[in-house]
Image (cartoon, rainbow over all chains, first blue to last red; front, side, top):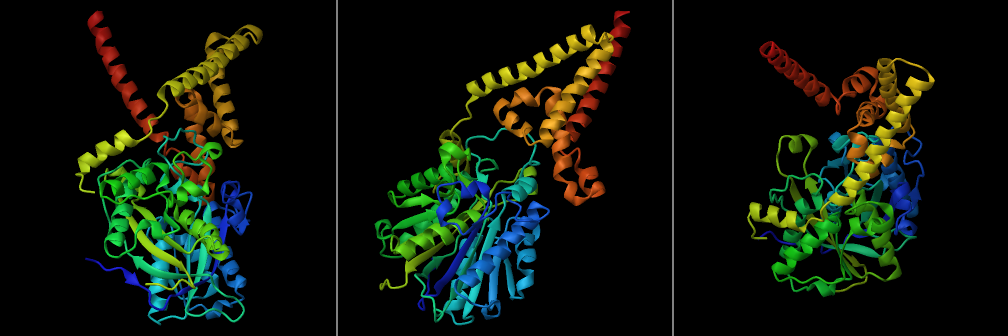
Length: 341
Length: 150
């Protein structure tokens, strides 16, 4: 049995920042996001460069929120959906921080938080940054059709969020700023392929992986789902989230209203025409950095499970008829003053 | 969790909200019909008012519809119409025009050669290839049938 990682030294989330596009800023979580751009281009020539710029802005803002210079950050864990993770590498090049490029598809934020937690908890690093991003237009171009191509999307299709987020994880609070949340536990996801090959139903492809991680988490400790204020999956969307809930119920794990999905939270289903909900690396990252961190600040949340979900595929693997494997990385975020195991 | 891949696939198919086929068909009929009616009106206009020959009028109708579709694609409107109209905009010549212009607009940033030049026909390329192939097959069959008929 793969063990749950327990962060004994409780690495703190010192700061977080989110940068989103126009549509996300019109969505229900608008007030929780820090920066947006009405053109989705963030002053850049192309959407790909805009995504890099979003990462740059997010890290800058996260650092300035706690008045920490970039030289104090010892490493950055970052990733995105674009070919060869160029969104992260171009966006973060100017900082001069040692960089680990990650690819966990849309689970990258959770993966980065787990790695940040591990390195800070073990004392290897004092302060690290973790970022991820996605841009609807860069993802459409890479994975689907040209932007102006006219086509219809099935109800199970999801909408890649234009969003980036940065987190600063550290061992100790800075002198001026007190953090509200820390990383408590983590459970890495397994690659699970249940044979779904429909790229317009990623939720269904990822749901078994999310369910597997959640089941492994609850089977290894005394917690019950009610102990958490929120158990949130990354981007299963309406379709995948309801499948995940059914799989868990079949396995005897009943989840209530505290079980939600970042892809469901970020857009308004009725008015924003996003079909099954949001997706993309930036979806769970920005919802966590904005909405969830604000919840910790206000005391609404004391204990949250984030299960970052990713669909491990490429346009080529889809064209070659291969099925889509999913992954679900779990990270438990707790209030800093919460004293229990 | 213990479902086999086949069982899971079937379960997912049952679970998925189906596309609204009836309303999509009605919308496609209305939008596609409107485009074709516009074509017919243009044809009558070119033939009777501008006093063009039938063959020229027909060619100009296609050119006008293509021009309109390209313009609407550039103005970021065509994809909205297509989202509503579905096959109604895809099947007429308007859909083809959009399928060529959309990649052209999209790949400008990658340059004229490797961007626009190489990617222009990513969507319409297969249609052109297999369309040409199908017409060659049709021509051959037609030729043989005509030989026999004589």
